[in-house]
Every structure is written in structure tokens, then in C-alpha cells.
Image (cartoon, rainbow, N blue to C red; front, side, top):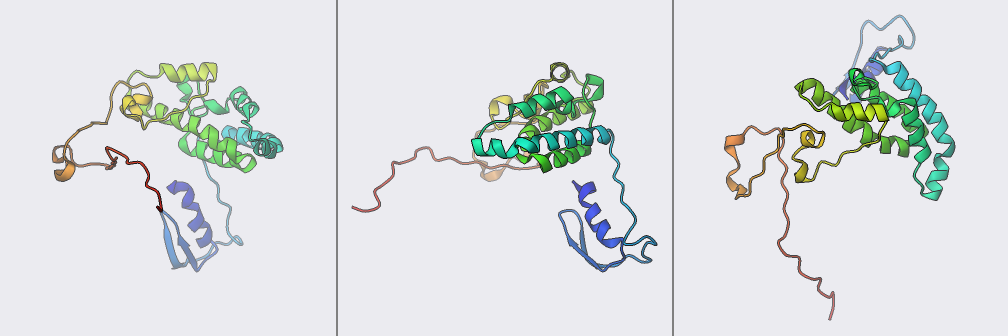
Length: 224
């Protein structure tokens, strides 16, 4: 995320420089900050986020707890069901759902910071629950933006503290909007020669091309 990654070059610049930084969103090449701050080595950086205190507090509590058994789950190749029970009980799994629908009302920045903190204690659990959190945040964001019905699923998840995840590569679900319960889609399918493109639908935000062989021959022996 640009706001978070922007803190890195700022931290390098505050002492005065020269600072060199190569990031996805920001680049510095022997940059200077004059006059430098009076505080040494630099003034503190405070990061604000709506609802972040509770999200980070829950993440820290869970991280410390989960870390005590993360190695055991790795050794036994077992799923941490007790971790998910704990996150459901605390409300951590409801974090992305809008507050007006019974959830935590966390922003995307809140979720990212909380997940980063959780991963310090148990990275596999943080990765697994991210499949749940990501889908709920997208569903909530689409609900806010569209104003259309579709919040019943979010309310049910919040009330019953359910665990969900989304797999949206199947054409049967139309699109991410279709997968999240909204009755419209942004995906269209055309079976045709793609040489000349599809100019009547341009411009495109992204183009994905797939190909498959109609027949896969059996393997041949490497030697006779």
C-alpha cells in the first residue's frame, strides 16, 4: 500500500540525508532534507487508522497466543482449529465487515496492519485467515459503493461469526461481484477469433489471455 510504503523514504529523509530508496511507489536518489529536524535522529512518526487500536490489540494478543503452538502445528502438519475458534470468539474475523452490519468496521489499512502483527506470531494462521478477511472486505466495499442489496450475507457472517473464503476463477460465478452475492457482473465472455481484438468493449482495465491444447498426446519414450 502506498501510504505505508511511503513511511520508509520519509524515515530515511528526516535525519537530513542523503537518502536513496527504491520502492514500488516511491524512489529517492541521494535526496536531502534541509533544514533537518531539531530532534535526533528524527521526530517520531505516528500512523493513524480508523479503529486500528482495537484491531492491533487483538492481533497482538492472538499473535502471542498462537506463537506458543505454531511450531507444533508445523511439525505435525496440522490445522490450527483452535486459532480460528479464538479469532471468531474475539471478533477478529468480523473485523472487515461494516459496523452498521454488525462487524468491526475496520479499514483496509487497519486490516493490513493487524495482519502484519498477527503474522509476527504465526504467519501460517495469518495467511489462512487472510482468505476470509479479504473476501469480506471486498464484499463490504462493494456494498458501500453500490448501495444495492446484498448485505444479508455479511450480517449473517457477523452474527454467527462464520468463516468464509472466495474462489472466483470459476466462470460460473461470473465475477467477484457475482461471488459476493450481488446480482450483476462485469465479466463478458466471447468465443471468437481474438486476432482483431474486441474494440467495441474498449478500453480495458486488464486483459487476461488463456490457451489450452484440444488434445494432449501420450508421452513418448525417451529412448528406444
